[in-house]
Length: 259
Image 1 (cartoon, rainbow, N blue to C red):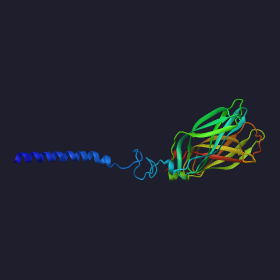
Image 2 (image 1 turned 90 degrees about the vertical axis):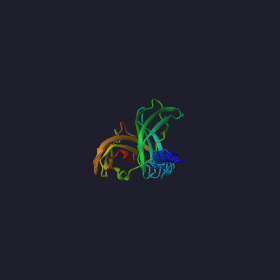
Image 3 (image 1 turned 90 degrees about the horizontal axis):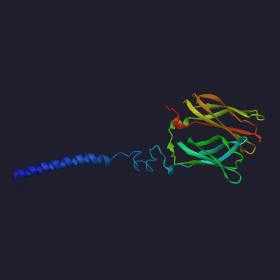
């Protein structure tokens, strides 16, 4: 082999080596790309595709489903009814940022009367009430109420700081039961954060612990360690004897400005 041929082979080998190095620089990062919670693959600590492990989203197999304990259509006045559903989330640190729901009501002959749709959120570890007011049923009193969640909303891991946010009801009193009932209470914010967009639902129960009345109100905001007085009203007296009353205040833990 002549010196010229050796020189050509050397140059070719150098070019091939450079090409392989460039190719490796392109391919290797793609092959060894760090696992993320949005790469469409199950990798890293994940127990499913982009869920579980260190990911914000929980896998379906890692959480317990919501339990709908009951739903009711409650008369207000004339053909107007309020709809309520009582739901429990057994998951200690998992909530849902946004989830669609639907009420459907039927008469005694199981004939459809009306439906009401909405969007809500689910905080971790506890019970909550979904309320829809002012539903006109016409001349067909509702007998059956169906409540369902719709769509495919996912449970998310909630910031541990938000788990310490707690709203409670204090000093509940009811008056004017014989005319226009009114419930008065204080909503207390025992957390270190200002809490805004608070929804509170009041439920009234008879001697058999059946819910016979429901009303809702909104509180704009409550400062840390403070209280705000709320009122719930009904336009007509109840036929039943009211023996118990409960208030369910809540705000989305996903919207609290944590620090």
